[in-house]
Amino acid sequence: MKTLDTIRQEFSPLTQDIIYFDSGASTLTPNSVVEAMDAYYTQYRSNIHRGIYAWSQQSTDKYELARLKVAQFIQANQVEEIIFTRGTTDSINMIAELLINTFQKGQNIIIPVTEHHSNMLPWRELAQRQELEIRYAGLRDEILDIEELMGHIDENTALVVIGHVSNVLGSIHPIQEIAHKAHSVGALCVVDGAQSVAHIPISVSELGVDAYAFSGHKVYGSTGVGVLWVKYELLQTLTPSRTGGDMVSYVTLDTVEYAPIPQRFEAGTPPIAEVIGLSKAIDWLQEIGWDTIQEHEKKLIDYMWGQISLRPWIHVLGGDKTMSRIGCFAFTIQGIHTHDIAHMLAQHNVCVRAGQHCASGIAETLDIVGSTRITFGLYNTVEEIDICMQALDSIYKTFN
Ligand code: PLP
Image (cartoon, rainbow, N blue to C red; front, side, top):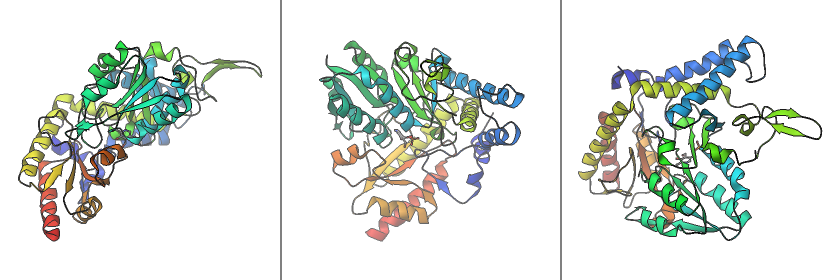
């Protein structure tokens, strides 16, 4: 069984004197994932679905095995529901493109102010084109006001979009209830899972949503690959928005017959090595197991709260300790700019993110310039939290 020590040894960058508290932006990648991608490039580098030679067959097999692994990982009902993309942003843009003609003027779309720009701007664009009303759900006590969101849903609602977990507040949203309410009025529910997949087990079928998006690089895989899961019944009604090679069965100068689902939604050469890497990352996570993952994360979260409560000058956004959350703490310190905090932490070799975290609706609603964000990965330790807190103490002293 993997222990925390052995887990850390699997990440080459961690041999450096660095505390990496920015896994919310991008997790580090275990060596086994890098090796799987390297093997593709050094042993059987070839395109998929086309060649009838062994290398291409091997690439195709690995690529399609990855699809199966992803389907099992998020408990999809059918492997065909998995579409590989370039990342969450790409997935959400794609589902917005695919859905555009299903909406009509006068309908409304519900968007929480907490959304990452990736799950806000594509929908704003779509709303503008189809003349849909946008209804923003705001904050209460610095977290998403679920009651307000539910109250916005009515018979004219076409779509509810929501992040499973806020990338600023770390809050886990009640997706099942929201999807249920959306469906009760005939609306769709699209979920941004960028911040959830590495932290909580996902069952898209249990959640009862219509589409779910995530990125490989936030779940210990590489950059450049993502997943768009769409419920098969919905997928069957959609016409590909992107056309080109590999998504067709038959083309003449006058006619085209698209390939079966899901290949018809994957035009052009996909990120093959990255998909293979994602498959390995899922193996890696599953080897550790959700119990260990969640136990470790809870330990870090509890320890973090303990340290924060000793420092009343740290204000955690959405700082309700009882809230269901992942290891993500965005905070402000009165009188010190968020970028100064991050910059000074970097001088102590602590990597964090500062600013609005591509979710400017939160900063705008709270009327703050931004926040400093600490996010945990599986390799982080309580000792690292201690070092970070001591660094924050010295930063605070410098300004007070
Ligand atoms: N949605 C959320 C909640 C995120 O945290 C992020 C990345 O920070 C994204 C979407 C965008 O992901 P990507 O840049 O991988 O497309």
